[in-house]
Image (cartoon, rainbow, N blue to C red; front, top):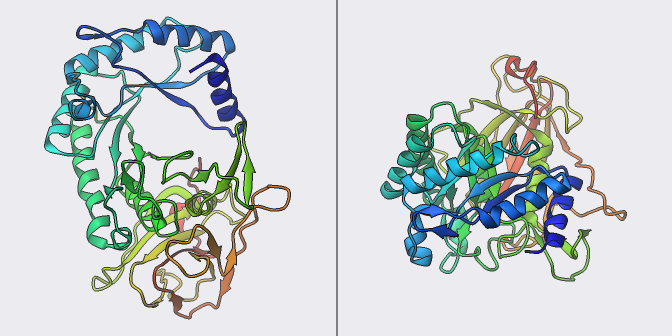
Length: 396
């Protein structure tokens, strides 16, 4: 990586108002200890340019033996993190940078033991505890995997074990999915970059929030079969970056709708037990990014069946007379492997000036059941809910 590359990365992050987290190479070592000399060259240039990234150190350390036939013990990694912390604290401009980690793989007995040992030994060095998670192997994944409740249910058990292990060691630390996606190994070609991948992504966002995960970082934004944007020079919609012309994919639009409508206060919601293929989540509506007022609620739902469901949204004080705005996301052309998505029947795409489109809801008649089509997902804003929990909630 050249200085020019580093400038481009930091400039891009600044322009789009992202916080950059850079992962340093923990496998540059002097015997049992990390060798920070290469990292310090990068840090010196970073300080000179006035950049303020956060940092990770190493990637999936519990599986290094399998990946590259190397090992770094949890004890040694904890000492390495402490070394990085001391180096950053010596810098006037980087001493406030956060360190997150240790980026262990999905919760297995071996990985959980590694995680707990690392956290006990690293103490308060990490600002957030991170784990990676994928559902299936991208080389063998099938279309049905993406809408199979038993596959989606893997996540709840994995998150439960992760949360329990981390809270036992460092009770006050935020918990992150530091890298996650549908399928490991670069994603599933023709699946992870199409409409059907949205079922895994949206269900993960809902379940992670329910279980107290503060941040979910999706693999990947750029490159691989699971990228949100593509570098192929295809017809519009396109978005310009520092590097090339990029095609926006369906999960990008799902994320855009989610960030527009969903606030960070999670609400309790229940459904009939026999509807195992209906998955429901509820949050206070994001009043900063949307035009909705405080007190509004947003329910997002996934219908994993092939046929429509009659959905009735009830709130105790309204009993079915709520005003509901629907944002139904369906595959453009009715194929689950479509690379484009419709919002209420209209294809989502950038405006002619390359700006993001306005999200226009479909107004549903109050008091009537909602016809929720099979194999789709949707957001329903309860406009006049006046939910007490949402009147004073703070939005990021």
